[in-house]
Image (cartoon, rainbow, N blue to C red; front, side, top):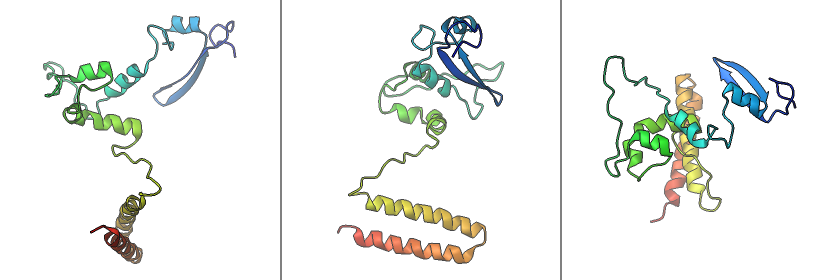
Length: 177
């Protein structure tokens, strides 16, 4: 594929820009990318995973940015290791385990944007995962029951309630001791 800009050299940089909902795909060569100011992987001004995370961490969902005419509040700092939030953004890693607690309010929106959730839902071990699967099923049924109640589907909700009770009894009988 040839560069869309010059039409002479092979396109080595392929990217998609979405601005205000408009999606544009670009296929350009290195020299045209430099002229346009687009970053190139591996180059001094190029793309890195740290710059990606830094961009995500600058996300301010509550609009807590400083107002004009006011002095900005000092950046949050970990009381254990002394790492500031701007330092964390630059490094891309924490200084200690307490950083999670001190920067938690800023991390939840980040995790939600990156992973789609703030709760980890990983794989369950095949042999010992029966109890975990049962608990998840109970949680799912409870949500479904609440939805049925809101929709005034009380017969369905009663069946779900009975199913939940049965699963809870199974969990209690399977508990050791």
